[in-house]
Every structure is written in C-alpha cells, then in structure tokens.
Image 1 (cartoon, rainbow, N blue to C red):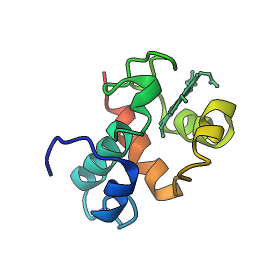
Image 2: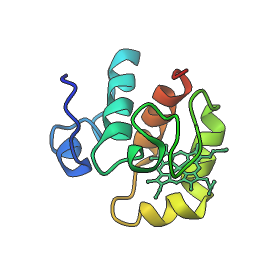
Image 3: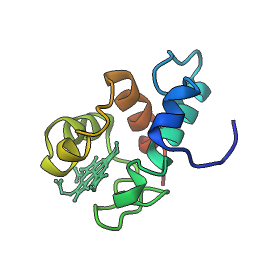
Image 4: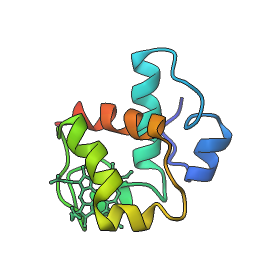
Length: 100
Ligand code: HEC
C-alpha cells in the first residue's frame, strides 16, 4: 500500500477499514491508513500521534485508546460523521501502541 493520505470514504472503498486483516502487518497498515486519513485522527493528533489539538497519544495502551474512542466527548462527537467499527478501532490502537 502507498503512503498517500486518503479520506475515510476512500479508505473504506479500498476495503482497508472493513475487511478483516489477514496478518499483523496488514492490521498495522490499516490502522495507519485510518489514523492518517485526511479526515482522520491526525487532524487533532498529527500524523505521528504526537499531538496538536489533542494530546500526544503515541504508545498508549490498547485499552486506553479504545476507551477514549468510546467515551471521550471530542472523539465521540467527531465520529458522528463516520462511526468507526470495533475492528477499525482495534487496527488503529494496534498501530498507535507501536508508535514512539
Ligand atoms: C476533533 C479532534 C480530535 C479527533 C479527530 C481525535 N481526537 Fe483524540 N483527543 C482529542 C482531545 C481534545 C483529547 C483530550 C481530551 C479528551 O480526552 O477528551 C483526545 C484524547 C485522546 C486519547 C486519550 C489520551 C489519554 O490521555 O488517555 C486517545 C487515546 C485519543 N484521543 C485517540 C484518538 C484516535 C485514535 C482518534 C481517531 C480515531 C482521535 N483520537 C481523533 C481530540 C481529537
């Protein structure tokens, strides 16, 4: 897969978001694409997760990332445009947990 930063709609079209990941590398790449999508998490947390409007979230535990997605107001409101599936949240947290 390439480095281009797609919108969530495009990510979904290429099947990256909704199709099951076959391997760990596959899941990580899906997570990266979703996080770095033009209208994704990076709008507030930057492409590397180091933070801008939102805090630095590199290397956070999977549980705290999932909890933030499901309960923090900023993230819940933002997802009203594009509700993430639990698989997608899992891919994103796998990728994010590995960032330094
Ligand atoms: C509209 C801006 C915005 C977007 C988009 C956004 N966030 Fe956040 N995020 C915030 C802000 C602001 C906070 C800190 C305040 C809070 O926790 O509610 C935060 C907090 C977090 C935290 C909690 C950090 C902690 O200390 O526990 C995590 C994890 C997180 N974001 C992950 C994500 C992920 C993953 C995405 C994309 C799926 C995302 N965010 C999209 C603004 C955003």
